[in-house]
Image 1 (cartoon, helix red, strand yellow):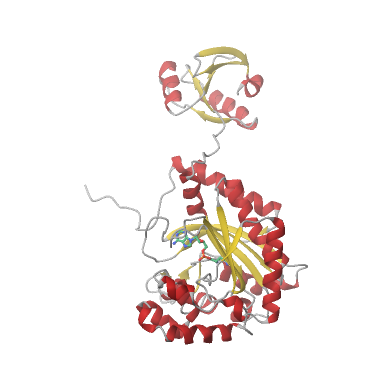
Image 2 (cartoon, helix red, strand yellow; image 1 turned 180 degrees about the vertical axis):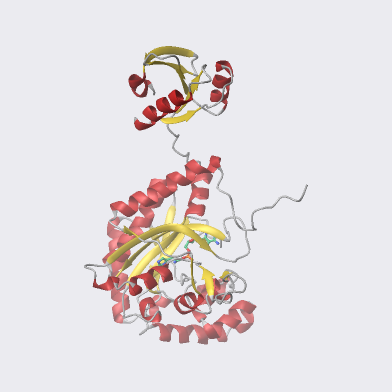
Length: 419
Ligand code: HAM
């Protein structure tokens, strides 16, 4: 026998026993997307690499180190095409927004999607090469109200998922007017302390000094005394951030300012934020993050268009909920349709169909085993009831497999008799 094929490193199979927890969390995300009046969008899982290098920035980890490249079929003209699996959805959504001229539609566009993202990173607990994000974006709204609304939406999601003690850490990293001043202050400060930086940070210092603040190995004392973005904001950015904070305060959203929160992608301007369970701020522990990206549309060749959104990691939310002991909602009781008559296949399927129409969760046994065996395996697969299909009368027998008692009744009464 040849060696079995295994899943690629950093990927996971969602197994039946995980399904309920995932469906619960994804269901809450879909439902909240509806209640907050977002419209669904889906974009391709692969895009031109240029979209990401222009949108996210050449020096972002997602582009520099973690890009999953895709090529066309061997021998085809597209073999060497410059595509990559999407590391995140925001660039693709803004591309679609521009490509379809969505700016002429009335009102800001409120868009959501749930889907897999790909980053060729070193796999670890909570960090996968394929993972799922729930993403929401509001394009065409300069804020500040929508900034607060988005952060409040994130907090509501965790609350509804039952994940406790989530804190939104927020910051403002300014815009094209004030960021250059802040960058220069960081370059001065860190250049004077080069010997205390990691190799990665020394390299980043020239290309993207904000990312030095992101370095988890940054000397704590050096970090604490580093220039703070909020001290360098221009008047417009300062007023915007003050308004966002005041709104979050009024709404009672649990948040804290974090001066080091600069985010890893170049498209951000002004408001940035990340969600963590309080006291758990490790590298793989951000449950979600996002911010404003007022310059992204222009980076992609479009007209100036403000935008803000977040990406929430579904994998990590499911893990956090499980760690905090949140139970997935029990599925509806399972009913097994069985019969002593090996010929009664049509009838088994008809009975199953009628029950399913009434909203019951049903598996039909299609074997010709003895009735006792069918009932035994029904109990083994977790059925709570069996509906025993008999002769030609309209009646069936409803058997409670836990209580081991049974009653004959018309099929039409079965759904109401389950509990
Ligand atoms: P991000 O912070 O790169 O932002 O990712 C958002 C969330 O995706 C993270 O907080 C984390 O929960 C999850 N995540 C990221 N990488 C991994 C991984 N390797 N394994 C498991 N989960 C992961 C963005 O992607 C932005 N597009 C968010 C955004 C939307 N900003 C504006 N709009």
